[in-house]
Image (cartoon, rainbow, N blue to C red; front, side):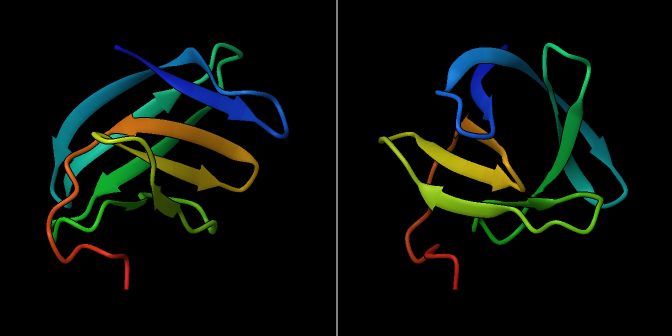
Length: 91
């Protein structure tokens, strides 16, 4: 599955792939850029979105269009399919 992504100030384009796996810490999403770079996110068990699965940078999650969220990790940005649960305001 391809998802919109961008690095830096570039516009979002459906250039990244997303893979899902289940590990000891829950569901992990691996987002792969066309240049070989990747980011890993863990889906929050409380329905509040995703968090960085590794690295020092925190995932910044905001509501986007209906049925999706925008996630930023450093200068990398993604638009991911999501179901926003009631009360999941990120606080």
